Amino acid sequence: MTSQQINNQLVTILTNTGISTTALTDQAHFSRDLGFDSLDITDLLLQVESGFSIRIPDEDWWQLQTLGQLKDYLRNQLTFGETQLL
Image (cartoon, rainbow, N blue to C red; front, side, top):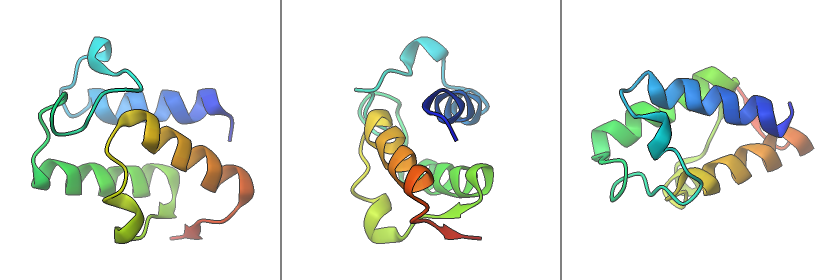
């Protein structure tokens, strides 16, 4: 999967939650900038796992604080095949 495909899929997932595309920068913090609470973050996790057909371990997920960190994580996992497929 290319970086552009990852980015496009993440934008689709996040805009479906009501987030404006203008707010979706790599520096956007999920709770501070995008207003996600713990339930929103859990829902996002489920959507990302489903959308990318992967499993993100909890210890990895809670380290991902920004959209850029999530993109980097997905790029690394999907490029090197180190993900746990669902």
